[in-house]
Length: 124
Image (cartoon, rainbow, N blue to C red; front, side):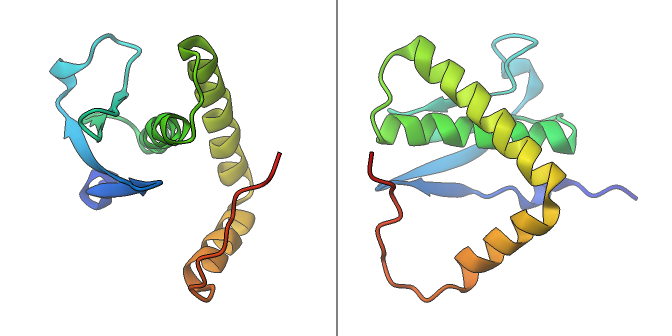
């Protein structure tokens, strides 16, 4: 029996000071055969196509989250932003898939660290 990862997809995510609703979108609402999700900053909404394999679902979810992060932190030019989102998401997903112990360790650190609102941003 296969696991349905759509059953446990987050209903919302916080990006900076914004809460984004996460919505599973019916396949027929896709803009094209190569668009698996979208992020709408005005509506504060992330939509994900409803028939993706688990690896594609995870990648698409993170891709749309990266769009929201880039919007919040001010990545401007649309072409550069899309390229940056695509490359960063694919790199992160590949890292997590190839290093599950490191990913689990990172999640454990984040979830079990003392809740001191430290600045986690790296200075340029």
